[in-house]
Structures are given as structure tokens and as C-alpha cells.
Image 1 (cartoon, one colour):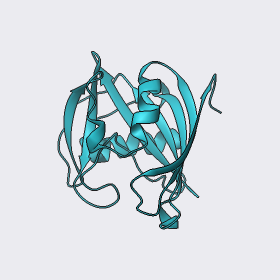
Image 2 (cartoon, rainbow, N blue to C red):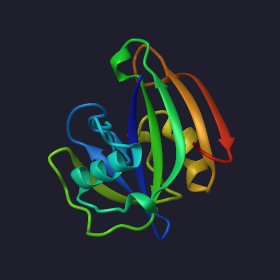
Image 3 (cartoon, one colour):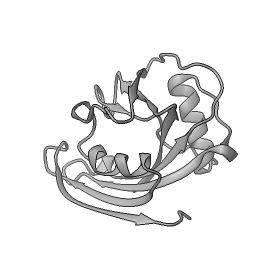
Length: 158
């Protein structure tokens, strides 16, 4: 099971979402993030991925870890991962399109879940309401719909 990062950027109750142009999650809206490189810790990977995907600079000491999501894809085991979710409210630069992602702002109360992964509607509202969570999602054979889910509100993430 590999570890990955996911950065959610909020400013004035608006959420910055990325639209994948290629690879895993193509044509889906999501936060920004990805794999952890050898020698990186989770926060360093989150900061690097954020810069690579949308050109924003964040300080690893000022990003807030708010979730840990475990995803199981029975028909695509190479997609199985534990995703460490960060909420970021301070950064430098303006977002810019990259080879991998475009971006768009959306109101936090009008999130387009129909354009996102099926799990997002279950956990994202909790995180945006200030909760910290751990969740497990098992997808069906179609790799799109949810077969089983467990979501726990927690006080702290290690």
C-alpha cells in the first residue's frame, strides 16, 4: 500500500480544485498531490506536489493535516493507497495550469461532487467543517462506485 498526499486549498470559503489532464484520476476534479518520493516526509511531498501541479508555494510547517483516507480498488490493486489530506489556507504565488492539471475555484457550499471521485461527497464536507477524519473506502469492480465505507472523526492524526 503506497502513501500519497492531497492538498485542499481554501481562501474566503472558496476551494481551489484541480482537473487532471492525464493519468490516474483523469478528467476528475480533486485537490493537488501525489506520490511521496524516496527521502521525503509526507509534508515535504505535499508541498512539492502542490508546486509541481499548480505552481503554489506553501510552507510545510504551516500546512494542516486533516485526514487519512485508505482506498482499496479490488480490480486495480496498484491503485490501493493511503492518502494524507492537508488543508492549506496560506500560500505564495497565483495558481497556474501545468502539464498535468488545470484548476478552478468553487464555493465551498457548491462543490461539484458529480465531477469528482465518488468518495469525496462523504469525507470532504466533514474536513471543510473543521473535522479531522480517518476513512476507509472500498471501490466496486468498476473502480468508480463505492462498495463499502467507514469514516471516523478523530482528535489528532499522528
